[in-house]
Image (tube, rainbow, N blue to C red; front, side, top):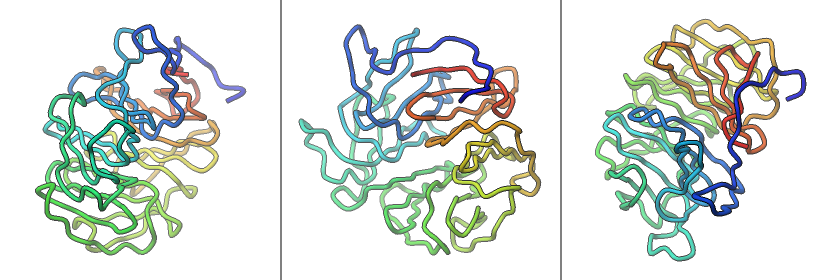
Amino acid sequence: MAGLVLTGCSVPSSTSAGQDVAITHIHAAQRDPGSGDLLLATHQGLFRLDDGALRPVGPVMDLMGFTIDSDGTYLASGHPGPQSDLPEPLGLITSEDRGATWTVASRGGQSDFHSLTSSGATLTGFDGTLRSTRDRTTWQERPIPSPPRVLAASPDGTLLATTAAGLLRSQDDGATWATLTPPRPVVLVAWADQSTVVAVTAEGTIATSTDSGESWTLGATALGEVTSLSAGRTPEGALEVITVIEDTVVATLDQGRTIKVLVQ
């Protein structure tokens, strides 16, 4: 990240209530829309940045897929921890208490969803097969031209997928797909609101669209290899993009020209 302007302070990723917690992989970093807290879904479970400290939430488990539904339910998948009685793989698990406890909703012992996304009405996941559900229990297989690395759903259900075949968009729960044309190939994508899309290239350049992917603005700064992406609006209405770069969590309000380190 040489050449970037750094602002703000950082929180060591090993800090948790005064004890060392070795976080080895951050699979997702996003804000809880209800509280604004930063959440990290990791190889060691869920963590919350709370009053300047990174604290574990709930049991130790490998959260490969993680998202938050519009009703505040946490949704996840992956693998159980060594002391867990949850199935391997987890299937779809849900939490109604902000990650303190989890329940298997469906496909326990069957699915490890590496990507999960929810529009409120439909939950979509990829476990080697693209699947969608409206009740978190009964799943329907969906076609897709190429396996997705990342899935992202807008509040109205428009689905985006980054694939080797390009950035794909579906407006019918994944039944059919069209190809979008960002200025460069992108590897990660996220919705910030109903019409604002954020994508990241392999070099870590941020592209934004305010018309659901029809036209794009490409930033001038390459952040490096980004492994996780989320986006949203600040209370003041600014577009905040949160990325993970080599297990460092950073935020930017200007397409990467300046960044604030949140966790390292």
